[in-house]
Image (cartoon, rainbow, N blue to C red; front, side, top):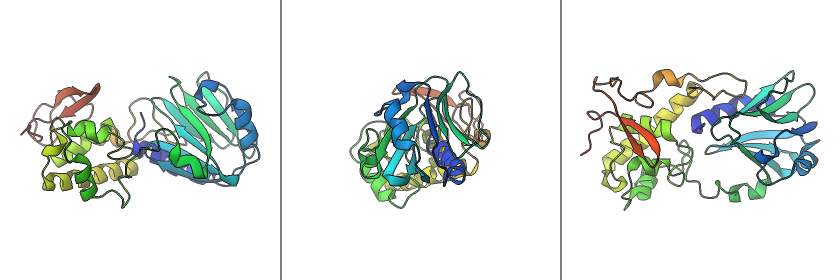
Length: 276
């Protein structure tokens, strides 16, 4: 699933392409992707609207249109949102086409068909299911060491599980939780309330660093993820632990260990991240 760096990269690559474009045509090829609107209403409310901005909240992408309409996308496992300046042929996995100022088009591709989009208004975006309970944005001033410490206080769940809880911090997923915990030297199995103030500060710093570096590399691509122009990311070449179970730690050479937490895979170094 695209995490914060991937969605932010998509936002940054789409924004200069979409702002000022007018929606001239709406083709819904698979209605199940529409979360709260019918194909007919989607076409009626979007056609003729100019795109005014492209935003992000956690793992959600927001396309703002004139008149206060907002398209909200959650790409889930295999969703891709790609801008084609000269248009493109529909594929078996094309789920939605927005015909923009001719001949440009925006396509939603999704092999596994888990992506969802909602159409709402500016004043109701924050109340959408999923967005309403999101915690602070980790790269914004609202995310502080003090706030992270308060979110972990009294919590006996593993720190990895708490980081994946979008109420703790918005947009963090399996890849970057593993990477941030490694940088901070914290074992993912430790209870959240066991972290010292110094460890919380180190984890806060590691989260921000790894996310910023991943964005600068265009995100992490293993199979499905590409940016808004169809290009893969490059951060996969810099991963320290995620997806490297059994391989040597890049820092100390110890074989990396894998575990399952809440049905999610977790990889860590038993030497650099001791379970104390």
